[in-house]
Length: 444
Image (cartoon, rainbow, N blue to C red; front, side):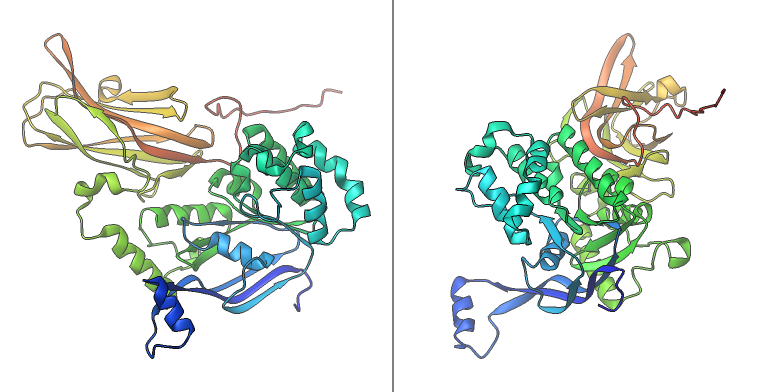
């Protein structure tokens, strides 16, 4: 590795798996008994290039099956690449899938020494770090029990405590933090901050876009084994949102994000995904298949008016299910009117994943639509607002109701139809950010 500032150098990386329709085809091909191939090739990674510099915190994002975990396993030596170059400059500590590197029959103490030895530490060095590991894991006397008896939360606490307290030069983490409770996650991220201040290198995969935004200096976007781009977390999260909904008209490099469709391989991968997602179906007929849509929607009503389509767009009109805190987003609802109605009310509400209703409004509150409607009409209602919610996941509900004489009627109501992810690099206390302007004045 020529550049001594590089912690990890990946060039032209390919990982190919052979897929067989039947088990016997694998044997026939292995024994050379067939002149024609019995397998098809699947690219888990295709011509990936990546440089990570010392002291950087880099996040890798992408949909399931994009190759995120595969590239981490190759970098750590768990998997071997099919072709390409991988060079690592520094001692790595890795926390991959739950259980990797642990002997389930050993107790916690024995596994601490086993893992430390595998990484390259002497018994004396592990002795010196043992108490720090035990304090960080905080699992009490369970450390003397076989790890096969641990809960998933206890397991990840011990595994992370080992990985992060042995003073590695490079820390690699693959989604492991999603297992621990919120307090343990907070402690882990504080450790991330300590690592960053010490100039250590961190590479991690996460579906928590807020964590990527807050802790990473740079983000890498993978899709179907192809590296679509790298850049600031904000830009890559924005690109990822487009991938989620199959929209690939990404900004050019001049606008801050690389032109991801210029490369033929990338373009081919995008076109394949686009075909898979569209499937020849009309969007209105495939509402339940949209990204972020709840497949088990709770609905009821008379259906005199029916919600036939709904989706979210960001401030630039791009369909998405993830928005940045502080940005503007629009909830779209299209309603088909089946009978003449005096004055339907169109409503939106948002609640957290615990079911607490946080906010909502409707056309009656806003005094924006108080007219009668006729059978056969289709109305599009848009709710546009700036996001002041804290980072996290929220559920959106929609409704069409009204009053017929003195009776309140629900024409169509959809509960928890969509997931809205708010990405934030600064959260305050409670559900909303008051956007306070805080000043400290020295009066001495």
